[in-house]
Image 1 (spheres, rainbow, N blue to C red):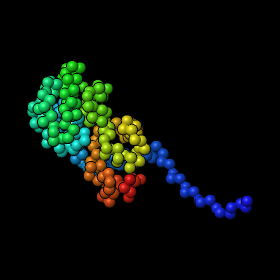
Image 2: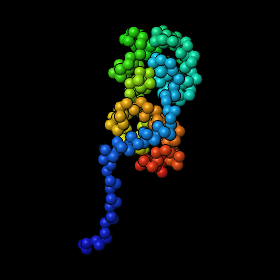
Image 3: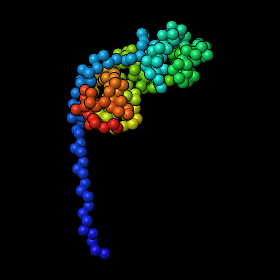
Image 4: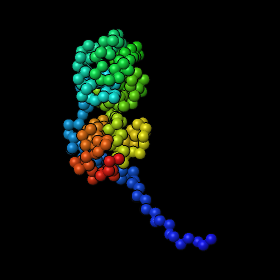
Length: 231
């Protein structure tokens, strides 16, 4: 058979790899710019002590901070300590939690949380990640929220906003939250982890939306490899 004279399509040159050093510099510049864009970045759950923050964060799953803040004043007044949650009447607790959705599961978590705190930690919220993640309804995300905002221990909160924004920024290609946390930790100084998390969450809630990011008014668009896309 005659040999084909058609030329194979030219391969598109691969995008140049970004060195770790360059990625670190870019990530830290992004964090500085986000600090300027969101000087009021903070935990948006209302609380006055570690137990209140722990409860509020557990309740924030599958709902908004705004809605949680509407429910917690009554909840915190009715159950001021871990023993209160441990001994709570389930029907009453479910009634208070009903506006949040998934109220039965959340009531189960709070009952178990109170019992575990009373039985294993003398009613106090522990200040170590290893202890917090053993509590009902508490994973690394919730633990890092509590550590960073109630105990001043730096932590990276990988919620849906942090996952989306860090991926678009090119800080991680991982899907597992623990691996995302490790990737971000390698880029940002430990002392900045908590506030950096707040800034990424503010960016995700206010600018870098899931369906249609507002790149035109994003403070870090010039440093974002995903700018101008909706992915």
